Length: 133
Image (cartoon, rainbow, N blue to C red; front, side, top):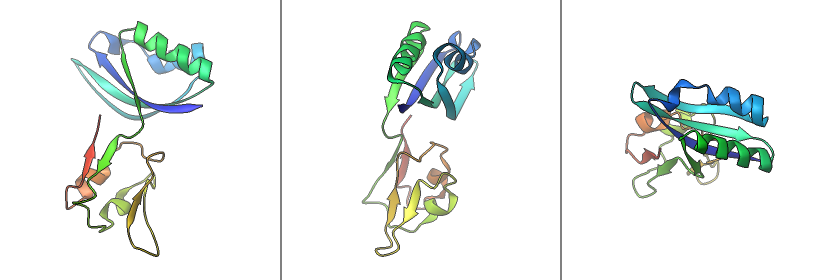
């Protein structure tokens, strides 16, 4: 089982290596997709793979550490009305979450592949993509 989660840290909570604990104690395979930290705290977008029980226990551990955990199903949003399928997002997307349909020439987005890097935001001339974190 796997899922993408947003972890929100306060200044105090950011002092412990939670990814180490997730691996060592809960046998979770973490993949940090995005992290932003400063002296007031921060956030991390984390993909976690493990058994259903281990994921549940790991999330409970994080919440017990006063870390806010939000399950993400989508972390970018594309405004279909503003998008004119130019393909700029496709050319900068290293995870290949964006693709062009070879028949219709429409840009498609696979949310499962997206790693929330934000490259598509700056590449989009129509400003049709928003990062939801």
